[in-house]
Amino acid sequence: MNIESALKYSSAILNEQRSGEILLAHILKKPRAYLYTYPEKNLTPEEVNSFETLIARRKQGEPIAYILGEQEFYSLNFKVTRDTLIPRPETEMLVDEALKLIPEAPCQVLELGTGSGTVAVTLAKLKLNTYVIATDISNAALEVAKENARNHQIKNIEFMISDWFSNIKSKTFDMIISNPPYIAQDDPHLENLSYEPMNALTSGVEGLDDLSHIISHAADYLKPNGWLLLEHGFDQKESIQTLFKNAKFKDIQTLSDLAGQPRITMGQKAC
Image (cartoon, rainbow, N blue to C red; front, side):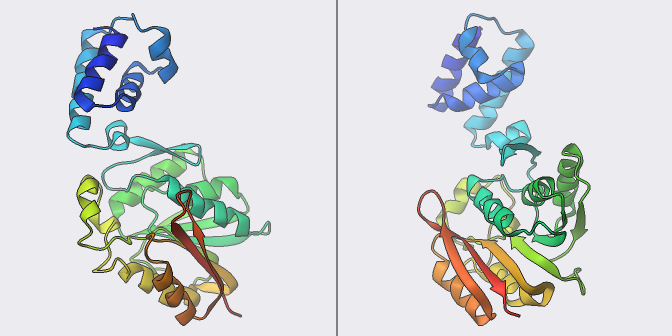
């Protein structure tokens, strides 16, 4: 089997081409362009066996990020495992807005539910004046996040086991940021996410339980004029804005993602 026939094989099995390209490039440790520069290159028996194994896993529906054990986020590479969600492009918006609001002066940011640590590590890497505390209820997820921080040589970060604010105690922050679970527990789309940890996806009947908890308690952990930034579902804008208003936040605004869907809501603690 050469590269050209391997790609034809994967396309026939998967009914699409991109996954086969990514997996074969991973096995060969080459960029995808190499596959079309040297289509006649023969694969070793070991490479063929590895490729067929990975294609079979992809055929069963396993996400490529879990097969490879990594995912790009904000142009950085992060380790992911099945203990963590796969980082998504929508969450890069959360980082975009945080970077705009974080001051140049030294400050402290709290990320709730860090998962693989993509948001916290990215903020800490791009804002060296910022000290980030990143929490998660999952020890397994925190171990992945810590490894990602080490891989990116991040020093201005601390990881903490916490059920939302449970272990934060009396600390206050310039910003609290989170991409919490926000999918309704009976949402039919969940069947397409079966490889990812359900406790990081679902949150009650309407998907609002964790968002409501964070919003109602966040002001106690924010400095005056501190910001709360949250990612949420496309159909939750009105509910989220009401929760922000009830919690006495000001300057509340909701931003839409590239698909035009409401995705990020932020507000500032009143003095």
